[in-house]
Length: 336
Image (cartoon, rainbow, N blue to C red; front, side, top):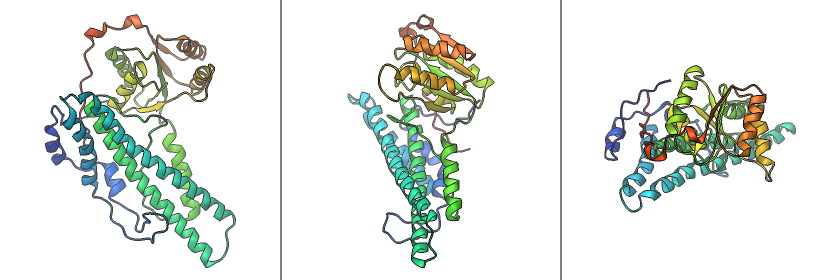
């Protein structure tokens, strides 16, 4: 799988010229360029024909906000803080998108309740239509914020050399649909889209290893060979924020492979082993495992028992840390 990145970023000064050559991506055109006819900005407001930001302006400004932080702090005594601050700015988009989604869910539940007790009155129908429009407006707002978050996250990946990921939970998006539909069709479509955007899109490959791991090239090379055989793979990691898991997550961001992070749920000594069982239940087609603790050994045995092909790496397989070159910073993706 290859991607044409014709404009690389070697210096922060290159960014204004790059932005000037940009065209809005299909995601921005979809999220910002085709708004629903009427929208409600906040609950209680009257419906209106409100403008959306221009797709290209929204795209360029999202990248510019993140790039400005790196431009300001790089090669100063605050250099080490640039990634942390930029991560927080991307996370702000993610936080707002999550808040809007929770409001959507609440309204969708209210709509379901109203449909069950439908009344043949003008007041009831008016309230039903208003709630549907408000829910659609929230959907439109969330999808626009998710689109901005994803592009800001891509800029973060380019400038920091590692993919952005939320502190907890998943980062998923879905395309906007500016269609007026019936209440029943609207709710049905929303439920189907909700399931689809969280569903892995291809055969699952599991990757898990120790937090103290430095040889990124060893893992990237092996993942590249797997990707050649399984071009639509979904990569599932055990969500550690450094070491083995972080390296394979960075590869997924670089190669545009769907990434699912399987964080620990619950507490107690049995939680990691319960997660291991659930990972095996995903029916992976292959696995990359790095030498680690007894938890890693347990996962290895469980996958082996299930007949999953395993690419196992020992810590001794790594080149010395002083000989590891950093990954080359990638390029900002442009619309085709």
